[in-house]
Length: 260
Ligand code: FE
Ligand code: FE
Ligand code: ZN
Image (tube, rainbow, N blue to C red; front, side, top):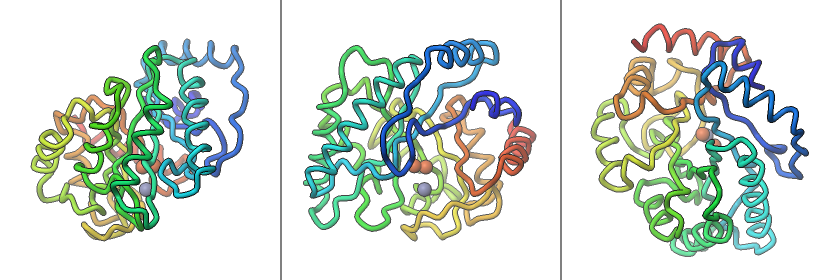
């Protein structure tokens, strides 16, 4: 995975630790960890941003689904801790008619059961588009989760540009204002990573359909401003655009040429 990232001149990458649809994690080989650590250092890779399985729903009404979310979170933190100091991102979850308050309670409860003092992995809540009953559609909802988490130094936020835009934050017309609001509501120090995507839909559509960079409603100029923004430019940026490896390579080339 690291080699593939290098081949397209990427400075970091995201990965799944198990099938994104769920299932058990693959056993991690000590050799793989060692060679990855060497590569990471040699090429001064930025922090990794692993992604939890999409089937994880920490605030499901079904206790067995909540248990699965807790088990995955605990196991994946252990795996991530084998390569210390990286990020593990997850979708907070969908409350499905239980209401936001109950949903937030379950998510914070799961985090309080999973996070522990000695872990070096930081767990990131992803900003969501607000499709269906997704929690994390507003900075306020993320703040409420963080407020209820005991180990606040183990938690952060991953800012997904497509999701934030679809949720109704105008990062095209007023990026500074959106980031000021993030700072006021959550605190900019919690912002640890960016998922960089264009969006097939308009601001506030609550849809969550990613577009290639420059081919959606956010557009290249706003994406370049995001990459170059002083509050963001040192964070890991992860592309989740609908692309093959050649597509990612050309997006990275384009963005690097525009971000001086
Ligand atoms: Fe995601
Ligand atoms: Fe994302
Ligand atoms: Zn998405």
